[in-house]
Every structure is written in C-alpha cells, then in structure tokens.
Length: 126
Image: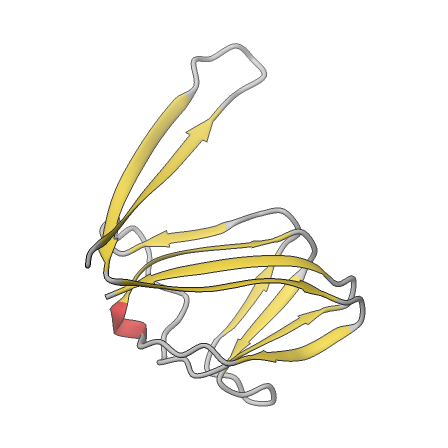
C-alpha cells in the first residue's frame, strides 16, 4: 500500500508582501515515528527504530526543546543532529535540494535533552 505525504511550506512577512507557499509530494510504503515526552535531564534515551538510509523518502522532526539526536551508538554515533527548540527539520527525497541527514542505516536512536520536552519525529520509507 502506498503512503503519500504532501509537505507544505509557507512564508509570511510583516512588511506586507504577499505570502509564498509551495508543496512537495513524497511516496513511500511505510512510516516510522516517535511521539514521546522526554523528562528533563534526559541523556541518551534509547529508541529502537530501524530503517535503511537509502529507503528514506521524507522526514519531519519536531521538538519543543533542544534535542541532540545520535544514531546507532550513543558514544560513537554514525550521525548527529542538533535540533533547535520549535524549529522543524524537514527533508524530502524528490526535492533533492540537499542530502538526507541520515547517512547510515539506523537501528537505534539516542536522544538527549537537558530541558526535556516533547519530540515528534516521523519518517516515510519505501
């Protein structure tokens, strides 16, 4: 079964310019997600989520506090992503503007957040 994501983006200005909007469509056949609240002082909280990097079609990562994501190993991770509070990380393969931040196959994710807070991550995979 195909899963179709429509990723929409918009921009508004306080100087009166007309808003800009756009969207991209990504297609996969599975979703992987994390929707959790991390307690304050969280360090290397482990989540067992497995996906092949080459099969990632799109992702959106949202955290309401700063979060450090490490993949596969908490001490020597394959990839490290530093998220800023409230600033989503969005990527789609079809757009092709920049490379996927997940460069190696993933078996585990380790999340660190000194303040704690909610994380909502979702990957579309083929």
